Amino acid sequence: MDDEQKQLRALDRASKAEGLLNNDLLKEAFEEIDRELIEAWRKEVDPLARDAFWQAAQINKKVQAILNKYIQNGKVAK
Image (cartoon, rainbow, N blue to C red; front, side, top):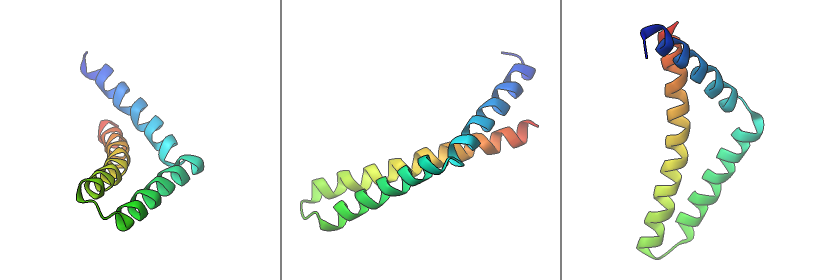
């Protein structure tokens, strides 16, 4: 893949990522997932289950961070 193709790919991914992060339904889903996981984590007494809920909440945040990274990469590619 040459530099121009890489730049076009980065711009395309940035556009798609921005569309996802600006989608109200997806925003609501991320927020609901986070709320439910944190609530389950707070209520759980079993340490292993608590850890699983915490890890799942962190993955939810990581997905959003990766999409934001794609947006930043697209800005750099311009």
